[in-house]
Image (cartoon, rainbow, N blue to C red; front, side, top):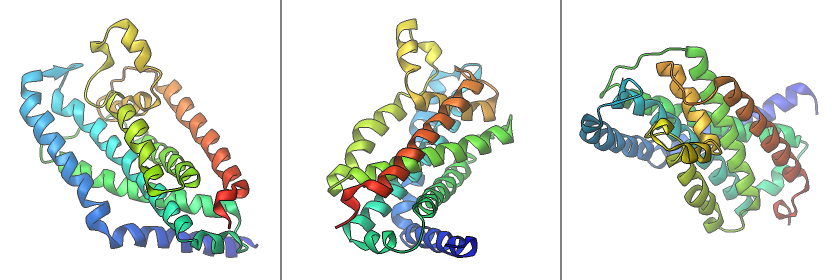
Amino acid sequence: MNPFAMLIAFTTILIKEVTRFTRIWQQTLVPPAISTLLYFVIFGSLIGDRIGQMDGFDYMDFLVPGLILMSVINASYQNVVSSFFGAKWGKSIEELLVSPTPNLIILLAYISGGVTRGILVGLIVTGISLIFTDLNVFSVWVLGSVVILTAVLFSLGGFVNAIFAKTFDDVAIVPTFVLLPLTYLGGVFYSIHLLSDFWQNISKANPILYMVNTFRYGFLGISDVSIGFSYLMICGFIAVFFVISLYLLSHSRGLRA
């Protein structure tokens, strides 16, 4: 397959992915905006005034980066897992797999669709946050790179989940019992400096903690963890999940009749 044909295949799948979630924007873009708005009202405005400052910043300013990245994580993950599993469930993925399109192009297109939705939802949540506080940006490069890398990682996670899932219930297991606890315990709502040394060490085993803190560093210039190590960890996870996804796409019997 020549490069021009691969570009057409990639673009076609990506357009399909973007069209899919924009066509049902009431289900894909509005719910994250509403849930985040409630977080801002309850945790930021009502509870935040009583909490005061966190790591030297108003609690609302501390909270915003975590909520933005949390919305990016959920959106990118949900987009790929729902789209690819839907294609597998409807048997349409078999037609794509028997086509001349390389598996690498298929994977990259689905990841790009997840990243697109993740970034779009992140921008919507960022716009909502401006209603409650003024955002100060410490490093644009850090913000952009962490958002893209995080969206790529969780798009890959959604892809792996979709391949292994056999029913729609299987699709919901990982977000409910793995993704949600890790996100809530990943420093979105608090600094790990508030915890004892034991629980700080436990928290440092949570990969989402590093993503949230690095993203917060892009806004506020503060972090509970090493920024360099965070980038190495995120890129390492991406490499591992990318290899696993490509292998499963080529060898998983569950994708073919």
